[in-house]
Amino acid sequence: MLTDFDKELLNVIQTKLPLEPCPFAKVAEWLNVDEATVLERLSWLKENGYIRRMGAFFDSACLGYVSTLAAARVRPEHVSSVAQAINSYQGVTHNYEREGQYNLWFTLLTPEQTEQERTLTAIRNLPGVDALISLPAVEKFKVSVEFNL
Image 1 (cartoon, rainbow, N blue to C red):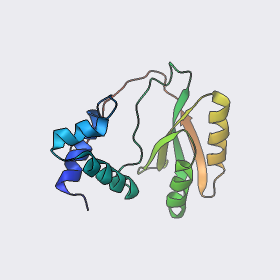
Image 2: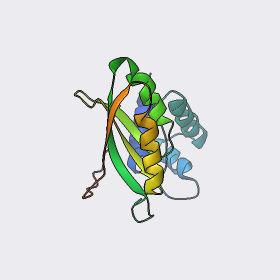
Image 3: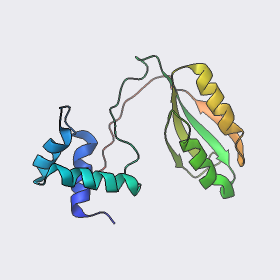
C-alpha cells in the first residue's frame, strides 16, 4: 500500500528529478528526509510494481529511431500472457488494455525499421493474438503526462 510519503515522492520524481551528481539527495532535501530513505522507498516502489522504469526522455527521431503505436486483437483468455510477452521486448515502452476489437495497445521504439518489423511479426505470432496493426505517427505531438497522487 502506498504511503503519503510514497505519493509525495512519486509526484516529485515524475517531472522534477534534478540533473545533477546526487539527484536523490536533492529530492531528499526537498522532502525533509535523508537520501537513504528516498532510495529505499524508490527501490520498494519498483519491486512492488509502482515504478516500471526511471530514465530520461530523448527525442528518439533525432537519434534515428523509429516508433509506432500498435494494436493487437487478443483473445480475452490470453490478454495477460500476451501483455507480459509484449513487455519483454526491448523497445516496448508500455502497453495497456482497452475495450474494443483491438484490446491490447503498445508503443514500440527501435533503432531501425527492420528490427521494428521483426518485433511486430514475433508479437503477431504469439498464441492468442488474432490480428495486429501498426500505426506509425504521421505527425508528432508531445503531451506531458503527470499523475498527481
